[in-house]
Image (tube, rainbow, N blue to C red; front, side, top):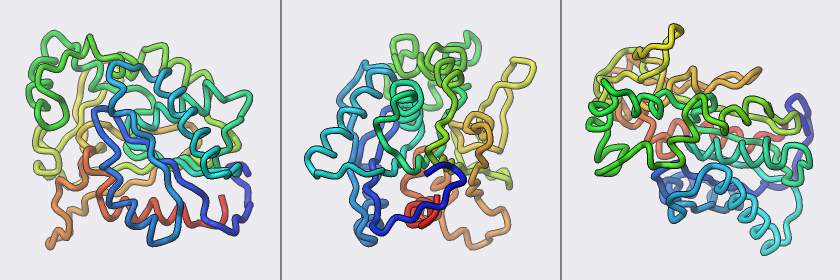
Length: 276
């Protein structure tokens, strides 16, 4: 059941939904309607109440949650996992670092939405003595809670590009028995209302180690941070030629990825494929 395999599954596989940082399971409400309509069983991992926990602790909690769901349902086969943002880092830490050798948790597909797989430039930018304060102010009430202190947030520390967690993920590498799908959004037309807080752009770390902004991102996570070796990005871009704008530009931003109808269509396409 590897990346290039062709194993067919007669029944829909259960799906575990993993939300991101400062988020909650309610972000999956629109996707859940589609899962139910397709008779796909789903479970939700809720870590919204685990304030102060780091990625390693959340990965263990996810492991326990999957095991509990298996025990309750009696299901022992492979599952699919859909995760948003840092939820993908939590999931990957479980599958690649904690369970990488034993591979006790059988997973067919991991679908990540806007994941900072290579660490977050924004997490690093929060600590910048010149730019950090302004960036935090712009995101407060939108992506950050009032009074946010990056130095006191375990998740923020874990997703800094040079953190031990990011090093462990890079060292472990992706699992050959899992098919990875990464869905991201972009703003090729440069619309400022795509993510107004940064004028439609996304911060990233430049090749010289400095800061730069790009339209190749979702306002929070640039494409560069989502890439994994050998895995193509599925880019859902705001069409600059779509005069009707069937979806408001902000629906393509990072926070709204799990709610975006185009993204949901891609997720459902991957979940219902009969080949890995």
